[in-house]
Image (cartoon, rainbow, N blue to C red; front, top):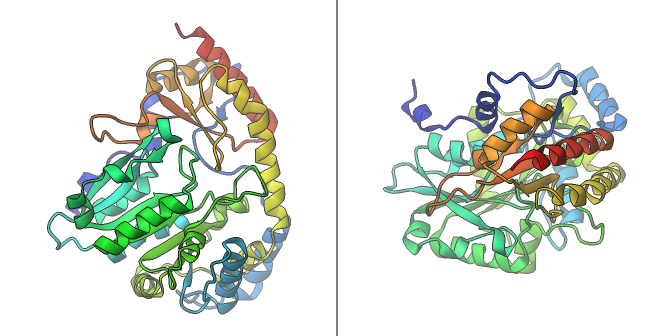
Length: 399
């Protein structure tokens, strides 16, 4: 067996199952799961129809790893529309992937060089656990950078020692952030780009939540737009990852993209050719339809906006939290230990949420997820409303 597997920590949802072991929740209350960021709004029918059309003739041949030209062009066109003033070349700067998760993992296998002494991958903390697993299985170490609640959960990048940056090969950034919902501004990106220039590391920008926001006039700034605004032609050492899972309520489609530095895209394509990560023609057809339409995305945002406007103040009255800049999570403070509260909530109210400490690691003497829960407002409004009422009731019973 690969000895690097022993470096992996249990996945958060494995830990959540263990936390709930032996509990028989109140059978009179229906289960409500707000622990996982799985969109539950309906997938638009036109995407399903396109998938079916693509399956008629598209399953008789092996798909190409670089994807069909029409899909690359649709993604590049969307990126150019969404992230102006960025312009993306469909031929050299974009690659379809099977959802952002597998691509974020595989990217570290492409760029990490375990032969370099002390090589590290820098990750935000708390974070999406794929970043850590990707680094560890690439044979390098992980350096966690804590979010600062006093500064809107911005990460303390400036606190990272220069000798750590000097050994860094890859920086994972999540904006909008999971779980805090914070968004990087152009000054934040400028600082990170300057560090990348100085030390030569690649940046993987996870932007799978970029299309869930609450003010149509203020979409979150993406890394491609920031790079273009700063005059960084060709997006040096930058790779941006996006997905249809959240944007188009199609997590089962497993469709996304990576875009940016043509040199990185070329290397990633070479890796993926051997890795066997080609998108089927049926999924490609559905993806072209999804990336080419914005009406359903606006409607999807409206559903989330209504839930947050109605439910965030209600939850905040019991567990302090704020409407995030983007994304579909509430990052709420618990009245007691976060894991203990999540276990009690499941036992007494049959509601599942994710303890914040499960998403973080201890760094500089603290786990920045401790004392919080992540509440995913992904279910329909009525179900989310019922869950919030149960959470408030549970919190009221905590002494």
